[in-house]
Image (cartoon, rainbow, N blue to C red; front, top):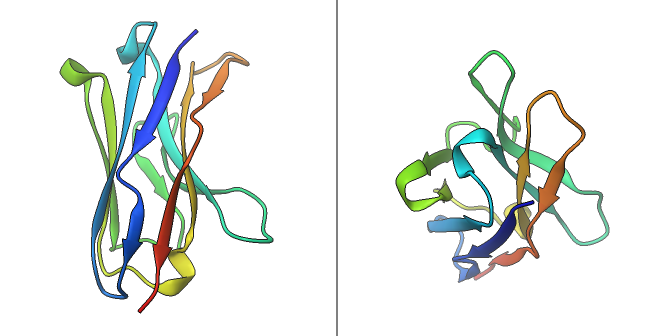
Length: 117
């Protein structure tokens, strides 16, 4: 089992940037496919960015060209760089770790991102 802790959220003005981090512990980080999801107020949780089985990255259409997911296996951390933020990006952002080809999937507690002037 893996434990996930997100950080880096906060209040930012439209057009600003934030970098979210998700630190993993308790298991071998490199075996997990790591992704980011978000839940806006009154909405269901949705994919932001996650790796595909083919090795590419799937981004939500609404964040393409603005958000970038990356990982550092040496630090057991996955990042989400968010640029050109918009008010509609306001949500709780969740880190997800899953073992490809298995039902095992783990979630962090979430970090709030608020984009407002």
